[in-house]
Image (cartoon, rainbow, N blue to C red; front, side, top):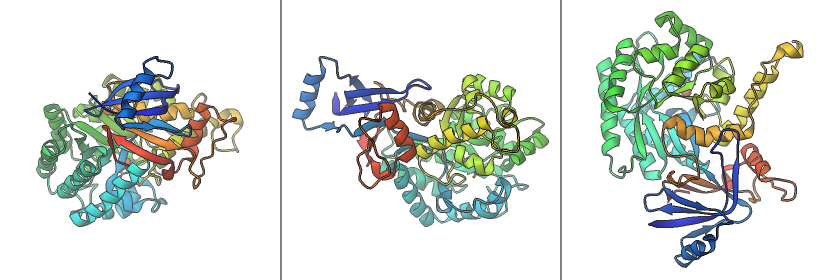
Length: 450
Ligand code: GUN
Ligand code: FE
């Protein structure tokens, strides 16, 4: 049985590098909130189906200026860093963590504070079109449960982890798990809380095993989490080979790169998402690919904290699943459309090089650019693949996670010139100039949440 339909212009990117636009199609949604069919404008059935919904008053008819897109997928967000958005960007990773980020995250011992911040964050991400987010919480179990409850209440699809960090050499006394076993037990506690939460029968919110990164965890913690992964099959998220300092730290401690080390603890699984991964080499790529693990590309944050640009095209050529992440607050913009733009920009910097003192042929690295179509694929289809969820495309059997972008909002920088702009141009303009006011409707699993 179908519950409603949307009639209008659809844009999505099922294939890397290709945009599919369907003008005047009818998209039907079933009782479970999944897309049941997409009827194109030249299908003889269209008129009858349209009439059926109009009669029942459950047809959303979009204007020529409106476009239905898959909901955006943010594969790397630090929820507790929301109050830090746009500041503290002057330090390298290690010092930024110790001087700004750990002191801020320690405040989430206060559940009232967590409640205030997390509500503000989730509302803002939804307003910006993010229908699914993969969240790091803090070490605090109660605050992290609150984040899950808020996502359930506000209707966002979310994957949420209690951050695990127990290594006294890297984590300050005021902000670390009281012991390895406390970190592991509270991880189980979050899994139980989310799995049994009322209103989560459809598993719209999922628990995630979250070792912050290798430096913050003891080997006992990493192997304990590997065991929980094999017992439960939960998603896993962590930071991987992000910066010169972090990459070198793991080489010195484990004698190998992050990918190999994580694999030795059983943490490279098909539902693992590795944030950043800027310093992975060909062997790491082959390993990550062979395990079907994914990478969260965080292009804006990488400019500030990673000391390098991710060679996206090499990862795609290695068949690694890739999504986009804002990395709030390492990245200062909450919009995944902005992450698309930054993915394109950073790939251009990698290809062209940036130092005019070098001759042109030595300045950059060939064939590294990606375009807006490839970036949009990462923001939608790629994110869905990275998370192993049926989201990111406007296709039957996929969840109805979608947004409407209205390109005719007066108070915005997005301006379309009908006789100058093709449908691809419209998408490219949306990516570069959209504002949250242009995002007029948001659905997750068929529920309208904006
Ligand atoms: N590595 C460990 N923790 C963090 C974090 O909070 N943000 C980023 N960007 N990298 C990290
Ligand atoms: Fe991060």
